[in-house]
Length: 296
Ligand code: NAD
Image (cartoon, rainbow, N blue to C red; front, side, top):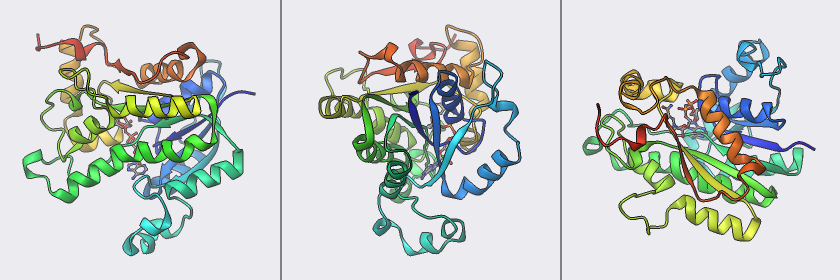
């Protein structure tokens, strides 16, 4: 049978999650997705009403099928962790079993196992604030939603992932270099997600530790893609995405706009047997911008 992929963090057809789903579908994988609870209704109804049909078209002309959409909130591991105000919030009350443990239990009941786990989500409530104006709660919320959420998802999914499986997360160069405007602790959250500190190459990073543990225990590979700028919903909320795209166009070795599909294709490669010896890696899919030391 084909491989089965769970992609966490798809709520429209503009982001990296959608593009990764398409590349995996084009390569023959079955697609199931996890959608943030507050965005679930609009995503599902748009999907039903055919709003995404144009962007569902695969290279062979067929339409990508999403076998199932699960509600999720990666900030909560089990129902005990959910505060009352969230439980009673009407956007949440309409859905059930959206904490990480319950989600994985539902996927297990419905499908038995998966082969590929993609983490394509991030959230920083104070992302537009400089770090020096960020509150403790805002900072910790960014780390919880954008970094620990990957540990939590992998931790629960690994028990139903087939040996030889792969997981992929997405990171951003702001973890290693100063990107003014990427605030609210989001740069720290990405650093905590990948911790690829180039000046300390001996420093083991989260991706490497997870690659070691999941590799030894479950024969699962763990890699992360450091993606260049894309005009996704999340990126537009940060407020400087057009500037970052222009900057890349002007300064990267490859002077073209990065398409989400290019990141999707790299993810499909990393998830495939073609990458069977690659684990613990940070792969840059950014037209080479990371290699520049100065704008030109
Ligand atoms: P996106 O808006 O398509 O994806 C972010 C998703 O996270 C959304 O679907 C949102 O609903 C979901 N989400 C937020 N909080 C959540 C929670 N608590 N539980 C579950 N889901 C939650 O935007 P994107 O830019 O494609 O982001 C995908 C990944 O790519 C992120 O990790 C992002 O940091 C990374 N990335 C983006 C860029 C860029 O320029 N767009 C560059 C490098 C890396």
